[in-house]
Structure formats: structure tokens, C-alpha cells
Amino acid sequence: MRVKYLSSILVDFTVVFTFSYLLKILLQYFVIIDHRLLWIIFVTINFVYFYFTYSRFGTTPGKSIFAIAMVSKTGEFSNRLILFRELCVKTPLITLFFFVLDFVALNMLNILHMGISLMQITFFIFLFLLINIVIFLCFSNSIWGLISKTKFERLHQDKRVSNYAYVIYALFIIFSYSIIRFENNINQNSTFSVMGIEYPYQFPKYPYNDTNEYVEFLSKQQSAKDYIFELFRKNDIVILCEPAHREIKSWEFISDLVSDQRFINNVGHVFSEYGDASEQARLDSFLNTSFTDVVELEKATSNLMRFMSMGFFNYLKGVNILNSQLPEELKIKHYFCDAGFHQHTRSSFRGDRDKLMAEVLIDKYQNEISSQKRKKCLLVTNYRHAYNLHKKGQRVNQAEFIFDKFPDNTANVLINTYALNSYLSSYPIHQGKWDLAFEKNNNKQVGFDFKGNIFGNDHFDHYVIDYEGLEYKDVFTGFIFINSLDEWVFKYNIPYAQESRNNERIRKGYPIITNDSKRGIISNIISNILEKIVASIRSLPISEIASNFYNFIPLAIFVLSATFSLCISTVYCISCLLRGTAKRNEAKGVIPF
Image (cartoon, rainbow, N blue to C red; front, top):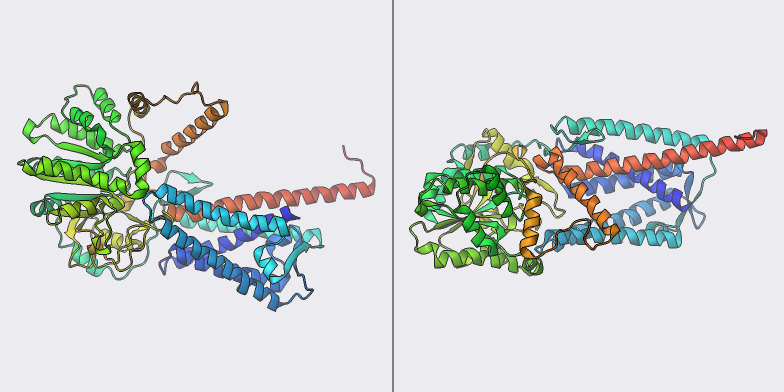
């Protein structure tokens, strides 16, 4: 009975979620759909679905398949009881869970290590589900069933009713799958698909009608590269907010910027979040070595890589080639800012990592760069590390420590990117309004100050934490548009990566992890499986395009719930059919072989 009940819950959940997703597809052409609105849609349809089916049929399609019916423990089963259970008990509990989860996600992600935060959120969801399962196993009922004094019993109905319910459900899933697949694939151009549904790397195009002022402003702006050099004319330190780490187009722009004669003559110094600061001597040697063989150059570049980013790999390789063509006094100097792996792990939760990274630039600038002819420097650092939240009184980000030290000659610039919500799901800034304006401006590369224009006056929605009251001009000096999100390219693997990792382990005294390490047979098997999974993921075409989990998560939920619920209900109906056939044969005296 318990297995049947849990199976029926999966079927009913799939129906509710599918209806919610279909409604989301319809509404997204008229209004902006964020995760909170999705929750409201889900909760509303959940109430309508259960109230209508219970009041009209006394059971739901899922419970009808498995021959289960809801009854009252007091003997009174009425629409008033159903309304109380669904509207006054279940709906508030589900809504409370959603809002608590949202609050937990938002506040846990205030700490600086996003991976740990995501694990905490996952643990919270798992804990909630575990509590519900324990309650059901102990009391054979749900929380709302206990409160509303309702329970489920075996429904004695004609077997054909279960079969009819199963057929209707199967047709509904097939029909819904066809619509969802068509609507998704028509907007995508991906070579990677799951069960015929292409990976949704492209974001929804919302129908904005108020972008004219944005487009008019963009049409009067200078190029992105000219804007950066304009900032260097006024400031000694310019901080670029790198988009996603493994996106290579931004590093192509940075490479072009660094190779510009204006940068070579007047700036000459680059700092990056990438790279261990303790490896500076090796980096200096690499940048001043002329390689005659491309293979040796790529191996040497790979040996400097602690993070698998093809964009940064190509950048370092390009700087080496550029330096080999420049006189000593004009060579590009690059500096790693990050702390070592173990120090990074210990300190990242306290905010020390950003302070340490900032001190690398501060010390180098004060003690060396400021006294040179080329006394300017470019810092490339990712997402919140580039924030200047002095208006909020915050001092945890790398840029804030630099602004503290050099407030009058520092500028920070946001490169066009996507925003992250409290579940690390990506979506376009201001739900795509900016991207639509850039598209109407023919996606021309532009750069501009945020102060005194419509872009800078928009609410700051770039990161997971809701900075209430902040506008973009409060966090960044300016903005550059390089290319659209649809043109992003992600590349993970770099040449000679495995050889590089092994050399790094040998140099730092770590053991090479191979099958003959002292980890045991099971550990080796698990390790090999995980390595193959990671290698497979990185080899997929999706690794070369912008990942959009904001669209992918609902699709994944639909595919998984629909697949599992159909399999379970199919197995159950077939088993019922076989048992019925066996009983009829037994009654007729037929002996099965």
C-alpha cells in the first residue's frame, strides 16, 4: 500500500508540474517568468488539480491508476473537508517550504563559497523530504493528511478504471512532451539533446516595448576598447569583471586589449584572479622565454594552469608570443593573485581570500609599478570579486580593498554577462531587457560609464544576493558590451592537461592518483567512474556554449518525473493484467507452462 501511495504521488506531481510548465510556456510570451512566479503557478495548479479531482471523482488520476481513494477518519467526506485539506493545510505548508527555501538559499549564499552554499541548500531540501518520508513511514500518512484527519485506503474498483486512467495519463504525457519539445527546440540550435529535447542554452525572448531609450543611448557610445583606454587616461587601476570563468570570448577581448599598442606603451601590467601567487617566479620565467616549438610552448602554458580555462590558456600563450616580439622595457608583465589551494580552502569562508588577492596588487603597485614609466595596471577578476559595495559598508570583495587603498585612481567595469539568482541559476540581466537593447543596436561593442544614464539607474540584479536599494552605478564605474550571450563559447579542456596536473602533483609532493594507489579496489572503481563521467560531460558540445540551468532545471524535472512515473505505472498495470489473466486461467483450470 505504501509503495502504491508513493507511486501515485509521483504521478500526481508529474501532472501538476507538467500543467505548470505548459502554463509557463504560454505566459512567458506576455510576462516575465522568474522562479518565484513559477512557484506561484505550481502552488495554484496544485490546489486546483487536487480540489477538482477529489471533489468531482473522489480520487486523483494518479491514485486511480493504483486503485487508492482518500477517505475521512471521522467518516464525513465533503467538499468542505477537501477545501480545508487543500487550501488551508497543504497549500500553506508547500508555500511555506518554498519561501523558507528561498530565504535559506538567499542568506546562505551570503557566504563566500558558492559550492558549499549549494550543498547546504541541497541538504535543506533533502532534510525536508526525509522528514516527510519518515512521517509517512511512521503514520502511513502525509503531514496534511494528519492535520486534516484524512487517509488513503485501497479502492475497490473495476480494473478497467485503472487501465483507462493509465491510458489517459500516458496520452497526456506524450501530448505534453510533444508540445514542450517543439516549443523548446524551435528556439534552440543545440547539437546536444536528451530524449529529443535540445539543451536550452538560449534564454527566453521577453516582449519588451520600452527599450528605445536604451537603444538611443547605446547608439551614441564609443567602442568597448576605446572606453577602457579612456578609463586608463583617468585612472591607474582598471578592474574588469570577468563573466563565467570558462567563457573564452571575454579573454579574446582581453588579449586584443593587451596587444593594443596603447596598452603596451602606457599600461603593461595585468593581474588576474587565476593562478597561485606563489607561482609568480615560474610565470615570470615563462613570459620571458622564447619558444621555437609550439608543442613546448603549449606544454609550458599548461603547466601554469591551475584552472581548466581555454580562454586563459590562449591568453597566456598569446602574451608569451607577444613578449617575444617586444623589447625588454615594453614586455607585458602578468601577476597571479590567488592564494594556494590549501590556503584558499581554509580562508575562503572568512573573506580572507579576497583580501589576500587584493594585497598582491596593492603591494606590487605601491612598491614597484607606481614608480615606473608604465604605472598603470589591469585586474581581471570574476563576478563579486570585482564589486565595489562601499555604499553598503561592505569590505569582503577584492575590488573593495583596492578601492579603499586607491579611491581616486581606480575604476571597475562590468563585462556583459548573465545574472545569478539565489539557486545559482543563470538568467539575463533584467530578464533580457539589456540584451534586447544591445541586439537592436546590432550587438556593436560599446563601453560607457554607468553614472548619469538609464543603464546605471537600473536595479542591481547581477548576483545571488538581493542588494536592495542598489543600482548598477553604485557598484560599478562602467560597462562594456563585447558580444551577445548567444555567442558565448565555453571550452574546458586544454592541451596537455593531464600531463600538467601530474607534473603539478609531483612538484608539490602530492601522490599521483592511479589505480595502484593505496585507496582500495572500491575507491579506484568509483574514481574511474567519476573521471569518465567528467570527461564525458566535458566532451559534450554543450561545453562550448553558454550553460543555462535556469531553463534546464524545469525541463530535467519534467523528463525525469514523466519517465519514472510512466515506467512505474506501466509496470503496475502490466502486473495487474498478468495477475488477472492468471486468476482467470486458474478459475478455468488452465495450467500455465
